Amino acid sequence: MAVAPQQQRADLREPAGWRRTKNRIATVLMVLSFVVVIIPLGFVLYTTIAKGASAITGSFLTSPIPSVVEPVNVGGIWPAILGTLEITALATVIAVPLGVLGAVYLNEYGGNNWLSRFIGFMADVMTGVPSIIMGLFIYSIWVLHFGYSGLAGALALGALMLPIVIRSSYEMLRLVPDSLRQGSYALGASKSRVTLTVVLPAAVGGIVSGALLAVARAAGETAPLLFVILGGLTTGNANVFHGANIALPMLIFQNASSPYPGAQARGWGAALTLIAIAFILMIAARVVTARFARYAR
Amino acid sequence: MDEPLPNVAAKTELPKLAVARSAAPRDDSGAAGNLIFDVRDVSIYYGSFKAVTGVTMPIHENEITAFIGSSGSGKSTMLRSFNRMNDLVPGSRLEGDVSYRGESLYGRDVSATAVRRRIGMVFQKPNPFPKSIYDNVAYGPRINGIRNKAKLDEIVENSLRKAALWEEVRSRLNTSGLSLSGGQAQRLCIARTIAVEPDVVLMDEPASALDPIATGAIEALMHELKQQYTIIVVTHNMQQATRVSDRTAFFYVLTDSKSDTRTGVLVEYGTTEQIFQDPRDDRTKAYVTGRVG
Image (tube, rainbow over all chains, first blue to last red; front, top):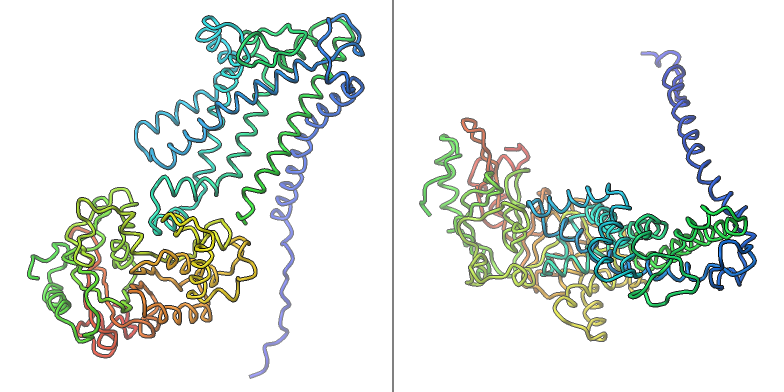
């Protein structure tokens, strides 16, 4: 009854050979794809800052739009900033509540009935509709009857945002665990109460993120605005419901397609401004969401 | 009491079942409380699946009734029929009747939300809302329209005290309910349930996810709560049933090999002492002595 002879020491290293190689290959591939993804993003940002930063001054942000032949130190882009803010804000007001309510219907009320499956399917189809079609649609049903206005632009952008908001909110609502709903029902809450006080607050972070992606996407759209807000303004139009308006993407498009160096510099400046607006929006939304979702972890 | 037996029951089981079922309602050796629930020949379906078949049992006021039995024997389903939580499962259906203080819970004009305000529930997995500890407890009272801050403060403190959690959280009522440990979270859920001053508290394996110390705390709490509430508890832990309950109901899975269906039935129901010391049915005996049936 001797002690087991020569106890072998456990080898706890990752076994050599194919398994270790596979692990390395996977790691390298992941790092590589990250680099590939970051290069175009970084390049876009770098070019925009390099070419646009010099244009941006206080008067550039606040002055009326000059003729395209003028150099960059004359006039500015204020009407387009104002237009973008007005139109995007109005589009958000139209699309986000509708989209979130639609998602609530799909996930909380519709279940698997034909109406909810139909709406879900249509939302998916709408995501794939080219943005210029939304512009044509609003042109034919709105602009032909009521004329050009920021509102028409907001309707076009809203139609573009709606399916994105529905889809992203729906996915967030699906992630809310059923145990929370049951906990609320067990206290005698009605369905609307459960949805309003438990489900939506639990999902608010993701819903806001999704809505924001839609807002940022819409703020950068040119095509749907081309024939519904007209553009060509030199001074700002603060009335979003009446008269032609202009937005940053349109201004960038017009300036970039003109041969004058002043116009092109203005285009870069406007592009940087648009990126900055999207960036500020993202940060603001993070702060707001963090406040709403402070109990979520 | 002599209604036809469920057709899923295997032939050889029939006599035993008949004995057990007719014995159940007669048992009143506990004597104490009044009836609070009267379950009459209840069968519960999920779609075409019959989860529970022909359960008849009285539930007594201010007592703790334990439901024991193996998985799939329908005890959780039965528990959920007392506050109509099964309504939330699409395709669920109940035959027979459950009456509560003389009123049918499944009557035409009965609102499930009204039922649940009187008959609260604590779940197997603690499910605090992603809100502050305070808001978790105040949730129910707010549903009932209490807006007065001082009144809410009082309810929150009392409920947390009753749930033996107050001392641990009094200084951090504004932190997230999700920051609590498992045992604390379960006590928070109990506090949340009793904050609406229910008449009955249903507990679905309230301690199965907890360590022995937290389990002990929950059990002590149940004894405490018994003075004021009626409690029905589903448990897989037989020691727990003997420790906390006044009466025990043993549920059993009947399998019909011919039609390949299974369903839960109530085999034996009596005082906890009788069920564990002197089970009348062989299957109960096998289960409570650990020779699982």
